[in-house]
Length: 208
Image (cartoon, rainbow, N blue to C red; front, side, top):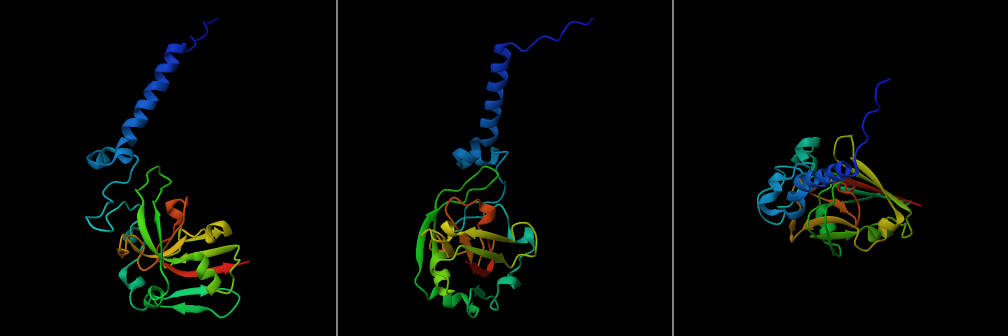
């Protein structure tokens, strides 16, 4: 009979583990350390840090990539807030005229990268739930103007709604959101994967 194949030695196993760790370090160092090393990060999105200024932090999903155009978010854009009573329809100017709140939160992508904290401002989801007539809302369906497809909507739970850092964000780092970062409004929620921080929001439906 043929001899049994040799078993892997402990030294060989350790070498494989060490090699895998080194490979992981190489492909993620840029996204962890940042700066000029970011271009070497094979698992981080490339060419998605737009220019400079308040909106110059990483983007994983651009407006163009999902079919959102300036026409979707132009002067005719409105936010619809649904609850047990009549639907509220608000312009962006009306939203900006309401009491604004701030939160320092990163965007953490399921691909393994994250941004530093950004300074978001807008309306607390808890306040919008109260405005909808459901101060104790158990969930909210967040819908985007994005054409139907993956991550064009998300359901947030009650603990996410009532966290005071959970916002319908209108501005970031002291400036209006850029189109790629979700203008005219997006949600930003602590510890929520980036794909579930829905951008280009146009409808919030609060439920018990």
